[in-house]
Length: 492
Image (tube, rainbow, N blue to C red; front, side, top):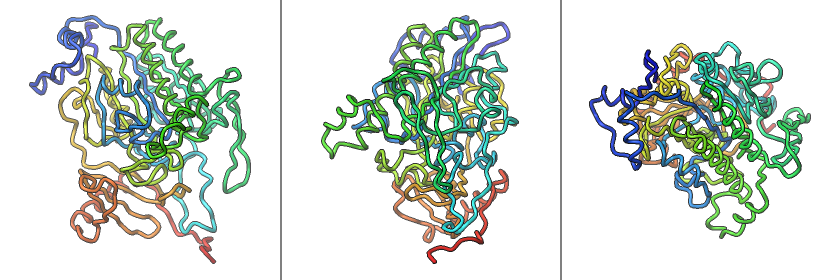
């Protein structure tokens, strides 16, 4: 943070004084020396790079335990910071999580609980009417981009937006000075230039035409083009006096599953028993890793890598047809762990610990207040009301106590093991209410990570305790409920 005299005071230095503890030695003596000199050293304001991957599963990185996907650059990023093993997306599908990241609020509080546009509900086949949801992120919300721009930051968004339609709800209306490839749709028509295509809306049978989100030339691959744009922006922005905030939001690794042919061939040659997912998906993961490497190399070449907070995460769990989320149950679209648990990495050398792994449960809303805290900016609790500042823990202390994390998905989709549900995780316990039937299931994640043993009938005390938490939370945030569907015909 900056004091009134313009001196840079490191956040972790403050935490060490408050806690009365010293950070452990890092692997870099330079970082240690840098931290020790923090109180008397003049520095530029730090930059922020937020990297959001689409549909990346919890175990789809080398640093998260995969022996199949090759992610050396992301693994190196984890070595430079703190990696979370109990990190969660705010929703099992993309748009609500993206809204939660930008606003610091639960999707249920925003009334934005479904991906846009859904097109999955059937008047005849679905027993319940879905909960209401907004089709755009409201302009009245004060996003993290707006907060940083107000603090003097240059702001840029690149990649998948999926939070509203043209012309009023694009990134440039939500605090971003620059918008590269941010559109209303959630996946490109094609990952190869000209990136065009179409999608048939399941319930309407009509086609949505997906125009090219950015320029290019024959042979260009979308993750590479976004990496090029990110590199160019970082170079331009770093030459100005003002710090920058870049949100690099890749369309990949969302379907269509299209990797570069030579990279796909490499994974096809691996023995079937070692393949955690489809070779095309593995190639896409590798290209995403390459893009992270290019960003980090650019920061290092400019001498600003140690003065840049980098946050890396995904918007929901891995897609069932692309990857294997084991040992987690289920996949994207489901409220089991495979649909909700995602990777998280925070890297800010000299400011936070290096090479640490945390099992503290965190979620998408925490990114907003954590960025503000890391930069020494005042919190905005009226905005990021549901987020928790992670900086104390990132610096070696403890995060503020959180009673529970919640989810509310009053919708249908066509992903395996998906159904409308409300969920609460408190400590090691996770309760899920099936909104069609009202049935509750209860799991102890410490003993049963795969959610195979329902304890709702045998541990009624814990079940009832979590039911009370969930009911109270839904009232607090104004979660919209489902109602019986009078047009439902079932199997008749």
